[in-house]
Image (cartoon, rainbow, N blue to C red; front, side, top):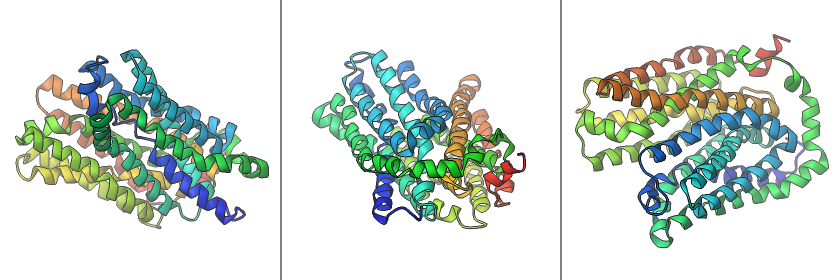
Amino acid sequence: MSSTPRSTVVVALSGIVLFALGIRTGVAAVSPLSTRIDLDVPLEGLTLGILGTIPPIAYAVAATLSPWFARKVGLEGAVVVVGALGALAHVWRGISPTYSSLFVATIVLMLAAGVGNVILPGLVKLYAPTRIGAMTAAYGTAMAFSSAAPTVLGVWLADEYGWRWSLAAWSVISILGIIPWLLLWPRAQGKGLQDAVITATLPIVTAPVSLFRSPTALAIMAIFGVSGSMAYSWFAVLPPALMELSGVSAQAAALALGLFTIMGFPMSLLVPPLAVRKGWSAPLVGTSMVFNISGLLGLLFVPTVLPFLWVTFLAMGPLTFALSLALMGHRTMNHLSALILSGFVNKWGYIFAAGAPVLVGLGREITGEWTASLLFLLAVSLVSLPALLVLAQERVVDKELAEYR
């Protein structure tokens, strides 16, 4: 926003990164501590698996309501509510006396995170419309760190203070993430910044045109869904699959999962700045497809030859997640369009992604081997092909929808 003071922009951009830093700390916080939690709260087998299905489902549900909620209270207000609710849910999980309490607290935490997923592209479009690539890289990296940190720091906290303090401690980051927005929220309301932009963009918001009519919106949703399907599937089954297919030890399989996780950092840093350059989005989708297909074919035909190479390829395949985050802002005309597109992409993309791990596991269960599951993921990776062709046209979602008004 050119009329916004530089100091306000600096506070907002810092707030975006801090907010993103706390948004996914709860996703991986329970799993590393499951054996300790189980001593106080029954948590093993099916009950732990059910907790693992909450994030993508909650994200999809939250995405349905997020655009309406953000327009009602403003983007700044939505950040404050999400951060406060997240902090409360972290503490709630830490003091939960029963599995039911832990389950409900996790749902609340993941719903808050789901709203955060949707509003982040809108915040970047509002406060950094000319720096979408750089800011998406910054907050994407912060999100990657927030997903990975509990697997290391959470265990250390549990060793020092117990699992309850470990789960509750992440509330501190959620609280830090809302401080800049507590400063900006009254100012944004007082100056009518939100009202001015809303008035200017009412035709886009109120036009009864479904985003399903926008090829670009569908393409972004498709690559988002493919990346989620791959990531959630491999998070769930990579260690056992690698042990059976490649014959590696349990320690090596755990190391492979760590490699898969850590590759999110370079992808979140490198991809967004490239995504906003003209002519780059389609080649990036193609690169993702090559990585996914190469890794899957390696595990299918030569799983014992260089298994870590195939894992590296599979880890680089979901680069389309960072790409889709950047395109939500880059392929829209204002922050409200970015917000609505983000809600659409998150909702349908996570619905698509939520079913993949289930089907992968089911394929292994029915056939007794991993071939059917790998072929299924190979088919999923091909969903990106039509998206590649659409994104190559470099069109803007708002202009595509305008053709139907």
